[in-house]
Amino acid sequence: MKTVWLLCGLLLLLPCDTHAHGTLGGTADFIHGALHPLATPFHLLLLIGLGLMGGREKIPQLISAMKAFVPGTFVGLAGVFFFSVPPVPSALLAAASLGAGLFLAINKSPNPWGIGLVYGSSGFLMGIDSEVDAASALPLLKFLLGTWISLSVIVFNAAFYASLVRERAWAKVGVRIAGSWIMAIGVLMLAFSIRETRASSPASPGAGAAPQQTAEAQMKNQN
Image 1 (cartoon, helix red, strand yellow):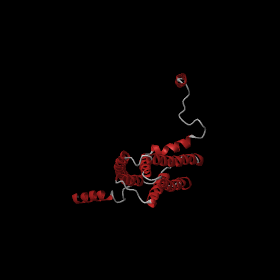
Image 2: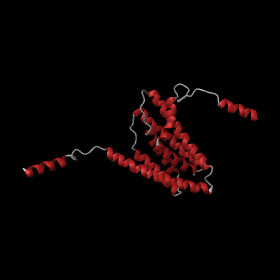
Image 3: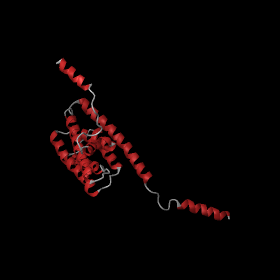
Image 4: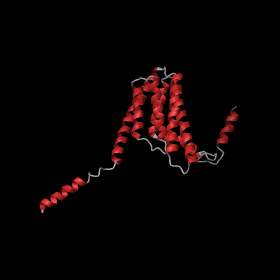
């Protein structure tokens, strides 16, 4: 047995070629789509919140929630593919994360219809916010397919493994602490999103006219 482990270790030391992308042709777009939720802070925070929320539910309730999440995500991604719907404001994703964190922090769960609504709307928001520039329809389709599978797998796995320890006292305390952090980060993200939206909004046409009129009036008074 020791000889086998020694041979495995020696094999790891052999030189080999490295690849920055998938070795199978055409998989790069799919992989990028699968990694997109993990590389987007607003999506990642909401995914953690949804996973912990689902982890407090029993498996039948979790499956019911996923039945709302998966179609909701699909509808959002379909809107991006077929209609080029613009991304949703970041404030909506931050508000959704804030709501999930609030439920976790106060140790409350919505009723079955409520949790289905939370999962479905959150999936729709993340799906419609997954727009990416693509040269043609096929790369975009691969990207969105990877995103759809990734979102569904991440949420279900996070909720499933969290549900395995939901009855433990330390897990209940940890989930509430995590919910408080999610809520706090959601508040910060919401504030920054609103501030960014206001800063990027164009000034009203009459905003610059008032100072100019005041200056002209002062010039007339001096003359």
